[in-house]
Structure formats: C-alpha cells, structure tokens
Amino acid sequence: MDSQVEILRRRFERERLARKEAERIAEERSRELFEKNLELERLSSTDPLTGLHNRRHFSASARIEFQRALRFDLKLSAVMMDIDHFKRVNDRFGHAAGDAVLVGVAGACIAGIRATDLHARYGGEEFCFLLPETGLDGAGILAERLRDAVAALHFTAGGVDFAVTASFGVAERLADGDSIELLLDRSDKALYEAKREGRDRVVPWKAS
View 1 (cartoon, rainbow, N blue to C red):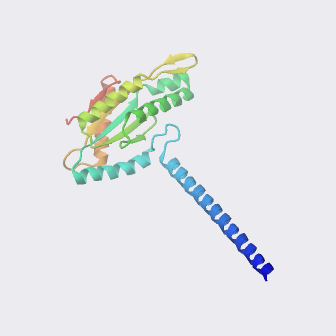
View 2 (view 1 turned 90 degrees about the vertical axis):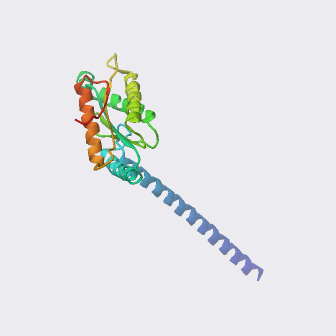
View 3 (view 1 turned 45 degrees about the vertical axis):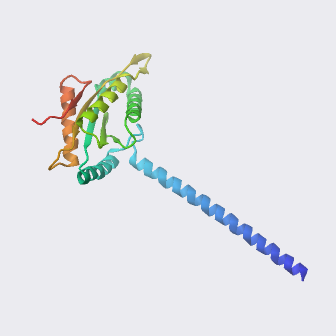
C-alpha cells in the first residue's frame, strides 16, 4: 500500500513539475512574441537611419493630435525644417558623411523637443515637428533652439571638419476652416521663405 502511495506521489510530482515547465516555456514564448511584435511595430513606424518617425506614422498621429486640438480648442503648431545645402555635403564628402549629418541633426532635434511633440523625417533632409498646446511664438522659440543646436554640431569627413545649418518654417492652427494638411502646408511655405531669405533662420508663416 505504501509503495502505491509513493508511486502516486511521484507521478503527481512529475506532473506538477511538467506543468510548471510547460507554463514557463509558454510564458517565455509569449514574452518573446510580445517583444518581437513591439520591435516590428517600432520598425514599421521609424526611419531606420535617424530614429525619427517615418512620414506615414507621423501623418496618422498628426491627424489624431489635430482633432484633439480642434475638439478642445487647443493651440497647435507645426515646424518644418530643412538642412541647408545638404547636397553639397553628399557631393563633397560622400553619402556616408551625409548619413552622419542626418543622424547627428536628428539626435539634436530629438533632444531639443518635448516627449509630447511629434517628429518625423519628412523627406530626404527635411524634418517635421508637431507641437501640441503650443502657439506660434512658442514654436518659434523652439525652432530657434533647434537651429542653434544644429549649428553647434561638428562633423569630420576625409580629415576635414565641417558644420551645417538648418532653415525652419513655423505655423499654428487657425481658428476656423483649418486642417492638418493646411497647417503643414503653411509651415512648408514658411520654410521656403526661410530658404529664399538666405537660410539658417526661422520664419513664421504670415497670411499674404
């Protein structure tokens, strides 16, 4: 009788250990799958070179933020930025140096904005930022801070030290009849004026 009890006890213990191991494996695989999904989501929304969000992710998030500003009548501003004479960097130093500039400038910009601000690599050397609960003056101050941060960067290629500058256009949400597309278009037009006026400057959008 005692031997049968011992046999049953051992069997139950083996089954308990087997269940515990199965639960551990299932939990580990679930965690791995969750981490892989997070990484896939990050890769699908992020520019792989600069770490900024890609344009698709930015556009979707910007629409949501614009609707929130519209619903609660909050200020909202956009900043469009372009690295000045970026083609000259590629032509003189090569694309590896150009990539280093993009990475450095993006890092300076990420460090200079708030965690709640949206960011994106909008084009080749064009970046975009959306600033919740921020008016035109606040956006201009932030853009000036980013301009200074970019100008303070130093790069080296082929034994030559060099720096870059950037131009900025800023615009804010209008009270009536506005959309995220129009807001971004106004900041882009202001950026064009900044480049037309000589680059390395911040220009706010003004109604013509």
